[in-house]
Image 1 (cartoon, rainbow, N blue to C red):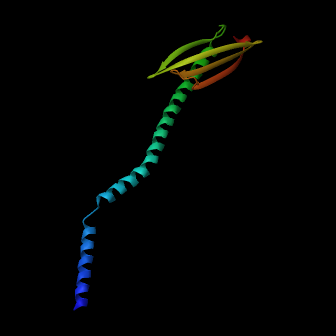
Image 2: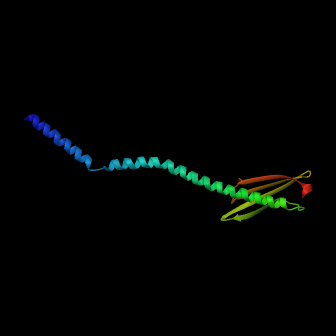
Image 3: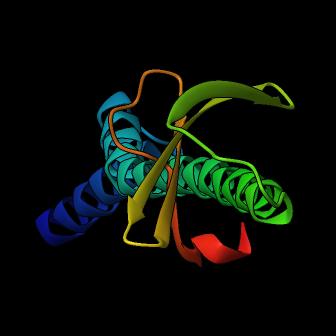
Length: 137
């Protein structure tokens, strides 16, 4: 009889344990799950934000290269004009670019250098340099 009582007690305690587990997640289990998800998602968000920044910088540099090429084409298409160093600004879309033009005469050979900056950046977004014969100008 004692064996039957002890077996019944074991089965009853086992069923109580199973019922407690069937009730759902505890608060600690939820917090651990949230922490694991946060740890897993943080690097993904960092990579996505770096990718967005890189795309923006590539777009700015691409615009700067197009501006530099356009300015160089303007200079090379004009004949008989003496160019000097200058700094001026150009607006493309919502962006302002500053262009620094340097012209150096090296014994009949012109070195024309165009640098494109945005805002107050010290490093140019684009650099373009051409050697031209002064006889053709």
